[in-house]
Length: 165
Image (cartoon, rainbow, N blue to C red; front, side, top):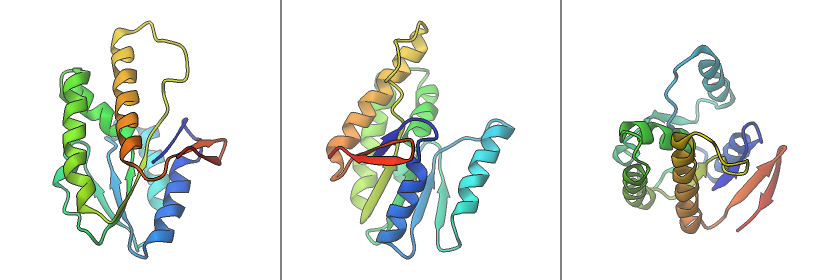
C-alpha cells in the first residue's frame, strides 16, 4: 500500500514498483471522470504507461474484474473507489466500508501481487461539513484495513517514500 497526499508521488512510485514485479502489469483504474481537469490527469497517467499494461476501468465493482493468480496489479486509487461507493451507498459510510471490505476479500486472493494507491486525507483539521467528516472516516477506516492486509506500507512525501511497514 502506498499512501500520501495529493501529488506526493504515490502513483509514480507504484508504477515503478509494479513494473519491477511484472513484465505484464495490470492497472485497475477506479476514477470516474467528471470534468476536463480530471480527464487531463487520467490521460497523463495513461501516457506514462506503455503497451505492456492491461487496464481495467471499474469505479465500483472491482471484485468482478477478471484477474488471475498470475496478475500483478496496480490499484489506483482507493480514494476514488471509496468516493464512488460512498455516493453509490447514499452517503452511508458504514455500508460503503462493508462493501469495500467484502470486495477486497474477493479481489486480493485472485492476484499474485496488488499495490494499492490511496490518499491520506485525515491529516488536516476536522471539517465543519458532516458529509466530509463521514467520508474522511470511511477513508481512514479502509486505509487501516488495507494496511493490515499489506505486507508493506509506504507513505510518500514530496516524492520521497517512507517505509512504514
